[in-house]
Amino acid sequence: EKCGDIIITVTREEANISPFIVKYYGIDLTGKEMAEYRRLTYAIGKMYRNEEPDIKEVNENSLIFARRGIVYTAKNRIERALLIIAREFVEGKKILIITRRKEQADELSKRIHLFADNVVYHSDSGNKKERKKQLDRYRNGEVRILVSVGMVKEGFDDVDTNCGIVVASPLTESFHIQTMGRIIRYKKDKIATIHILLANDTTDMKILNHIDNYDFEFDNIRLPKIVEHKKEYYEGKKYSFCEKRLWVTGTVPRVSYEYHPILEELRKHKRSGGSFVVAED
Image 1 (tube, helix red, strand yellow):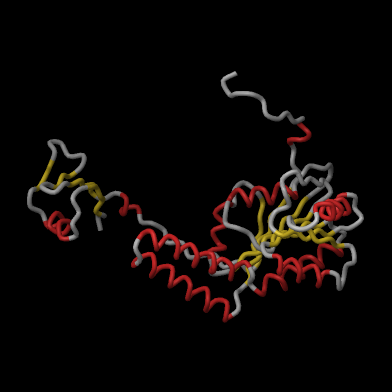
Image 2: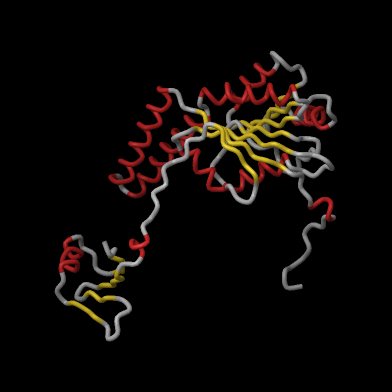
């Protein structure tokens, strides 16, 4: 009553998922790709610092989109994906492949056909009847490999899919969860494997923030350096200030200063009020 109307009802069996493991593979950008990636990263940072807010947002978004395009279409994704596809195909797996760009899916489909006839290619554009026909061929087991551009639309459900290969992925947690959901539909005695390709030394590594409560393996992943924050950085004195006075937070009786080096520095930068912490060291 307090939660609202029932939207959907599922049985206990329908709510189950199959056991699964996620394998992350690091691929490297080519020298040319990395040079362009770094050039765009520098341009994004420079624009963020210098442009007017309205112009900055438009230009920054276009640069970020261009940089993400380099990551999505990295040449080595195709080569690494093909090695995984060939191995899993030989082992008899039913494989769902998710790409981000049509050209990427086209090339994969063409090269998969060199060692496997039973592959279909799915895109959300084009003839609706033909798309349904291709999905039906995959669902009924006529073919064992489905190459998809983006995410197969919600409603796609195939319990026999036991292998997923994410050639390129957005950074959002929702996409990460949806992707796994396509592969881990429950079937008795099924164990699913999800392979995710990430470009080393790029924003792709943010996807690893979504790892939570499941088994995973790394292959050639170069983890970003994590700077451990020193405890004392968060234990310094807390201050608040206005144009005329600086207060030390939490002191009894309350300590304040009308003249203080910190206050003078804040005035130079035209800061009129706020709060901050000064680290002990």
